Each structure stands twice: as structure tokens, then as C-alpha cells.
Image 1 (cartoon, rainbow, N blue to C red):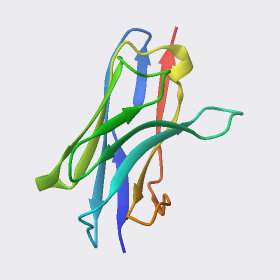
Image 2 (cartoon, rainbow, N blue to C red):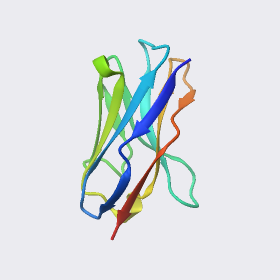
Image 3 (cartoon, rainbow, N blue to C red):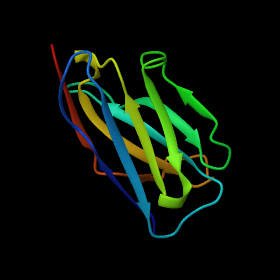
Image 4 (spheres, rainbow, N blue to C red):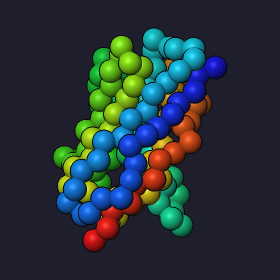
Length: 118
């Protein structure tokens, strides 16, 4: 059973930066995707960024492209989201998720809150 634990959220002023981490423990998979999603108050959860663990190929939502960078550290089983030039509309609970090769986001973290003040 894989578990995901996020960290790194907090309060930051607009224009600032934060780095989120997501560490996987338990059973590991060689062919996986991992991703970040977010859910703002009163809104549905939305995709932010994805990384293919084996190749490090990445993808981003248009709203964060050029500002956010997703990466991973194999040795630490950890995924990161570097968030720069943050905007108040980036305020949300950020979740990491894992697709173990089934095509579905089957494992989710508990979420970490990011608040961007104007």
C-alpha cells in the first residue's frame, strides 16, 4: 500500500514562492505518473501538473505554465512543485496523486494549504 504525504504549504505574499513536497512510502511502482492537483474554496479540484516517474516528462495546466515546475527525486521517492510568481488565485489546498499504471489516480495525499495574499 502506497501512502503520499505532502508538505511545504503556507502563507505567502503575491509574487512570492513556495516549494511543495510529496513523499511516497510503502510499495513503490516503476511505471507511474505522479501529479499535483488543487482545490480552491468553493471550486472543484483541478489538475496542476504531472510527471512521468521513469522519464521525467512533464505537463502543466495553462494557468501555471511558466510559473510552476514539477520535478522528482528517485532516491527520496519525492515529488516537488516549485511555485514562483504566486497569485492570489493560486490559493488552494494542493494534493499530490499517484497513478500506478492503471490510468487512474488511485492514491492521494492529505493535502497542504497554500494561501497567497494580495
